[in-house]
Amino acid sequence: MAETANAVALNESQIPEVPAEAAAQGSKQTVDPWNVQGEIGADGQIKAINYDKLIEEFGTKKIDEELLARFERVTGKKPHHFLRRGIVFSHRDFELILDRYERNEPFFLYTGRGPSSDSIHVGHCTPFMFTKWLQDTFDVPLVIMLTDDEKYLFSEKRTIEEVQGYCDSNIRDIISMGFDPNKTFIFSDYDYVGGAFYRQITRLAKHITLNQARAIFGFNDSSNIGKIHFGSIQGAAAFANSFPHIFGEDEKKTVGIPCLIPCAVDQDPYFRATRDVAARLTYQGVRFAKPSLIHSLFLPALQGPGTKMSASIDSSAIFMTDTPNQIKNKVNKYAFSGGKVSVEEHRAVGGDTEVDVAYQYLRFFLEDDEELEKIRVAYSKGELLTGELKALCIKELQTFVVAFQERRAKVDDAAVRQFTDIRPLTWAGNPKVPKADIVVPKVEGADGAEGGDGKLTKNQLKKLEKQKQIEAKKAQKAKEKEGAAAA
Image (cartoon, rainbow, N blue to C red; front, side, top):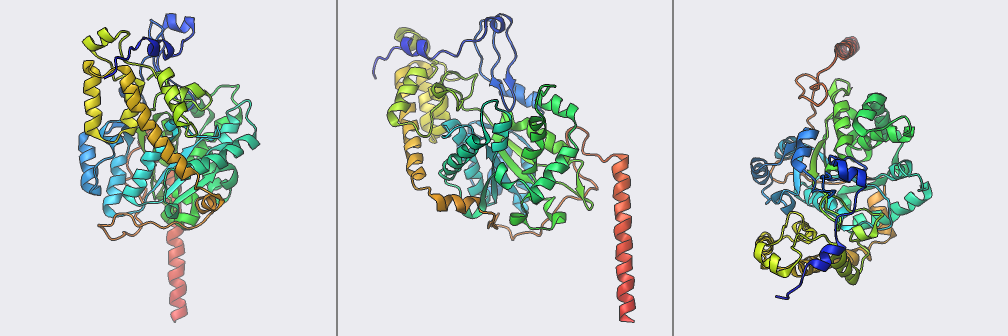
């Protein structure tokens, strides 16, 4: 093994400096849809994201061995290495999705991308990698939202034309992840919003107050109203009746079809709000299905585990357009090391894989569990040096990016239309079980939800009772009319 010292790598890959005032006081970690940063200690260093604390703060459930065992029993497939390694670590109602798959009742997948650059980076790829695996495993439809409107509303500099230009490039990137065009619909908000989708937006918007938007998202008096409204747009894609070309026009059936949203944990606030509203929405006595979520860790920026990759900072990310040489140079120069400053010290006490970026990237991209464990043990014991670990990481990333680029070169305009045209999708679901009739949740006995246990207010109950009476009268009149015609 080469005797590669760590001093140079450490000097060039330190976690970014923080303001002196913040360093002196320290600060809590920040995780929301727009900011991700670990806690800043009194020493001014950014710590790794504490995901157990996020589970507690967000009120989600940890994915445990029992849930993974059930997943394997129901699907007959070994859990993805993201699940096995705790990269996908948290969920909301994932067990209800497994219930539906077990009965072969319909559900769908929903994920998205905010188009902010011409090329996605490897951090953007990881949710799509997992989503593709879920699509292949469950054989269900998938909708992918490109939030071009969000990127315009939340940026002081970007123009509509700019973000729409990014959309075309990013759609081609997403297609290159290998999704099945027969069961995948990709759309941009600027192109698709209207009709059934806009009706859904207004349903959500009517039930999210300004105070709630401030509390959930941190908006203030200076926030433009587009930002405040955007939560209802992102939430609208979580309901099957927003896509009548996929699920049909009968809303009494489609409002009860749930979705599973694979996403990074910073997107959870949007869907907490969506789930809360869903608990209060009904259509002709049928409760809207709450979306289920499954959360992943962030792929850290090259600079360290308390940050995430940024499309606007080239030195923080490995882009899918990078050449093998660029990947090598970025990892060697910027990847934060968990090794010790001298070879002697590293040999004596070993490296820290918890903070070492090269090792963390291998957790995401190296599929062989045994090989990863060998690397972890060798680095922790000091048998493997930082330069050697980085070389392994570089090779894995180069292989992944080059394969992606080869697929990307084959995506033409016809392929884009194949994914973005408004059209029916085809899927089979659970091959072991005959396809069930659409089963939708009734209001009576509905399960709980955040922010009120999903219980109807007195006013809602009165309205529901009135609706039942109206439907009963209609049924009685129809019966009388049939009797008169027969006579």
